[in-house]
Length: 270
Image 1: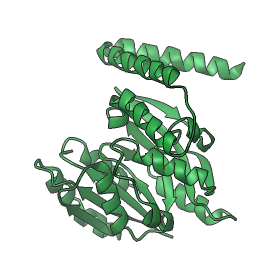
Image 2: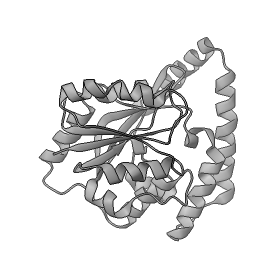
Image 3: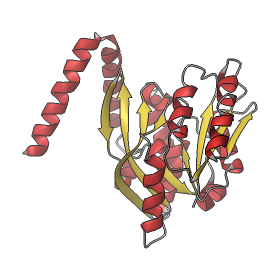
Image 4: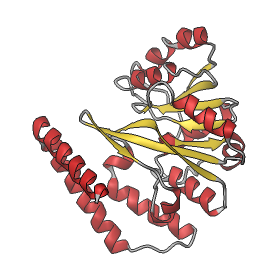
């Protein structure tokens, strides 16, 4: 059993080290690590190359490829081409595998399963301004939007080699793939563990309305209905709220998070 961990990056010298270290500290070495760089002009490749020996000493195959590509999903497809693992997981530059046992959790669940798993997914920690908020995935909600963070989604290598990411989409190719697999009756399994730490600031987190609009196009392909007005209102509200959060003093932001967490716990208690 081997997991291919793929990181796509471009000019990420400020973030790439955090991602690499999260992969390196995994206790289970049943993985290979593939970094697909889009021909960065900063020190991203230099930083990534500096970790080669550490992975080799750990007995982990380390692949670093830097070439100009057409964007994030082109890079992810390049990672698929290079991957030799039984399953693949994509951890974007800046994001992290959670803790030291993420790979072990993935491998243990797959090995113990009596049925073939096409897609294994867990939860994420959404990290914003130093605060961690756990978000659970739910593949049953995929018709309504991307309800699984792809950084916590582990997909069969055989499937990935055949399906790949549709590069016609700029933001939602991961949603397109997840929805296609779900509608194609692939076997999804949720594990009640945090798999990755997802840091605020990614494309889908910043370009909320554009992400929703692209999800409309994807759902059109699969003849899935949606309420344009309601979803665009929610997207606009989310964008306004993100702007407000960024302007909050850190102390106010921390207090707000505590209050929100307490309210949620009380709701669950009822």
